[in-house]
Length: 87
Image (tube, rainbow, N blue to C red; front, top):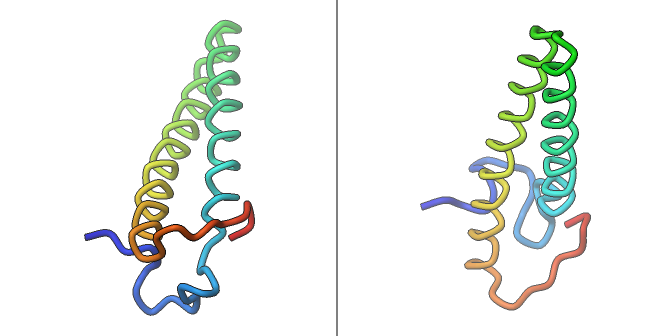
């Protein structure tokens, strides 16, 4: 079962360990930008840069999955609670 926060984290349910909504927005932005840069790099025949950007886009996808799992766990722990972008 996924927990909303890692064990031994300094945060609590009342005070989040990580600003999940902000992380979600930043990871989404990173995914879009890195995917665009990867395509542009491959079109410009700069293969090494395209590979680096594609790998960074993949990291953003993994981060998005982790964030969504933690947000779902937080929703189970706090049903009906509303969280701002920075919580």
